[in-house]
Image: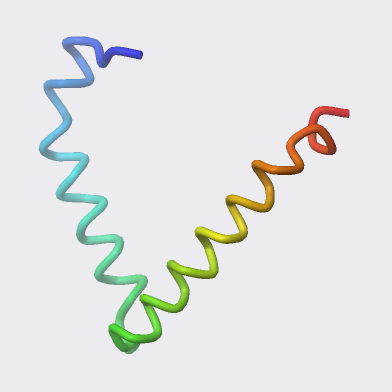
Length: 57
């Protein structure tokens, strides 16, 4: 997949907005808590991927 010229033009702005949103969402959450969340989320994604046949019904 390739980004269009129009998408590349707004890429920096979009990345800035995503960074700001992540800062808002993670306020008051420690680095250890975020690391645990990311670890659990990664395992959940792997579980979903392993069972994607259930999702395609």
